Image (cartoon, rainbow, N blue to C red):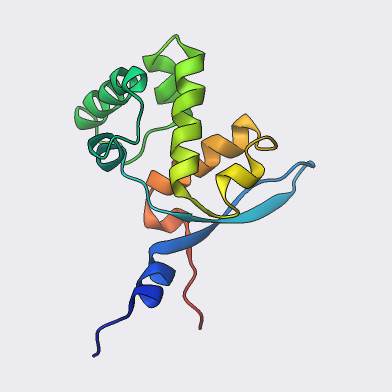
Length: 133
């Protein structure tokens, strides 16, 4: 076994996931990396006004056996839709590798953002490894 280089490491750290497209039953693929809300919070990537939303999500997650936070969980934890939308944008900006969030942010739907958010924090079975065969 040999040590992998940075490019190989980056390649293994990303996944291709399917999200809803723009037409009925259409799926499109995007490349994402895993997300850790705690790491994002510790690194100052989550604005202060969203820290309360994240804290509530962590508190609920710690008290539950669920492995991921669903859109329903988020909506039930906050009446402030603006905060939820901002959190989804911050998360998508952090996890989207290809295409970059900045390239498509004006075109992403709420459903697509939610799917990206869930895939980035969800179990490995939700994602397809991007390792060439």
